[in-house]
Image (cartoon, rainbow, N blue to C red; front, side):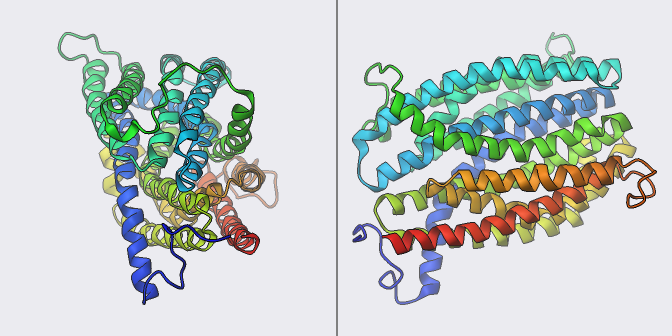
Length: 472
């Protein structure tokens, strides 16, 4: 197949391979940095909630932590389910088939409505698990209330993620950055008012964080629609020119691509989130410390995720234009950039672990344990960063089932069983630790599982890219 004139091959791109790598690095960075700012602002809302709850009381922090474990598992699974819009739109852009894009977006919104309503019901059912756990009554009340209140934002969240994927794939990433920064400021203000009871509001503790999160989700959707309406960049592919009923073939394509990604995200996030539930028996200190380490790790995770989302667009454009060699080149440049960041993040996290922990909580016991867990978080940076960016590159090839199987094996076949052995093992097991390692045991298991996933995905990306070149 003849490559598109818009995408050059390695042989003709530039007189120097290093120069070509630098050029692609700049292009990927230009697309990724607004996504990164937006992602950091979005996760910053969660950081704000956890930090404010931590300064309210240890019980509020533990309750919000448990609620966030359900919330994070839900929204990240939904992100995966709805990510199918991105590679489809990116391929249409690369092939210069702009007329096909509006239908994809409209059908993506129908899909968002269905999964958003389903998620609303499932989240409230999942919240009932706290009734069957050995929790302090105050912690249980905050955890259940957090899940219930935030569930009302799920339909808005799913619609926003469809528009997010559409906008990113047509190279419009600035809106998400600006909207996320606005939502972060709004979240900080509303949380401050409701958690501590300022300006005449009654103090709500951790439940105030839930109301703030829900309000900001609806704000983000409204702001995105407003931006799209005013910006000329969306006119060529405007998806709201007319009403369109659900279209079976298009929805089947979106579900076929999105369902494995959703399962993949669920496998990973559930492995992290379930740890909070499994170690709840050891008390609020273990749960709170784990949540602090996980929350800060989620913050650094936004960098490789943003690079991965930008890489999905860049690789998808090349594949849509029929240039498989440039697609492979772009994929490996993205992987290399991510590994460089992982090394810096791991070093910074290890050196500043005590300061990071103390920024989250004023409880010295929680801070000490959180600092210990941040050492493990630093160790998993290389594998975690590499697995997320390689999986995004593979999805640009519209390959989603094989990564799903690998993630399920790594997290549910390796991390969770090993974590239960190390963290919860009964003393009579001869090959178990002398004492259960609690949260530390689970973090060791996460490192092992993420390493399995990272190695497998790197091998998979190499094979997928090579196969596409040979078939071109």
